[in-house]
Length: 313
Image (cartoon, rainbow, N blue to C red; front, side, top):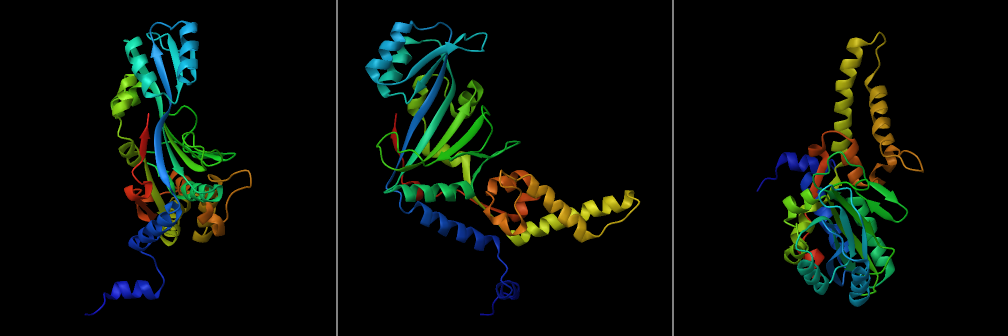
């Protein structure tokens, strides 16, 4: 059987197809997730809006009895004047608050996944892989930031955010872990996207479905990335030479375009060079560069890689 001449030419020239990059990404993901011993998912933080406050003595008693941190404060809502901040609510606390607070509204919940590792180095390696390849679906006009040892996929208090870190042990088993946390703000997001308006709605959440809905693994096809920038520069060149008194060549404006996109990804160490572009997180290039559908490959994280998370309420 004769081989496809286009495929033969592509193979001989060393060019990568999207299928090639997709398979490489799957292989890298399998290696990064291979040391995972188990995955634990749980509700890490909940904000509850209240029309009427609980007594401080009751809040203090609940905190001591159930071993959970409860903080009562004033909210900015006109209808719900008070807010209760709850850390890692237990099933007993959820049941108690559901009965004690007939009229309340959830304005924030954080869903955490702890990928438990045998040692700290394995946890750090998985975080490095996720920092590089994890991307947020429906990212919009957001900006990924890395602060100290934590990667944030949006600015503070955005409607949806992702946080990734590995410098702390798991909150559920005191073992080294890579912590991936999905944060959802505003009662509208909690209610319309995930059906969470009351605290007892947290019991019915499908943790794995939320994980797969809100992130992907992504990788760049660099020859197509360079071609997209070159074509973008060509369009800018035609517009520039049509209106400017002095014409410029394609190489000059291509380098100029590259500097613009690189400057959008600069950090405290400066803007990346063309040789360093593969070291920049893919999420940053999605935010900065044009024609993403041409040079971007995305795959969902395989369910087998997260090993059917153990849900802990």
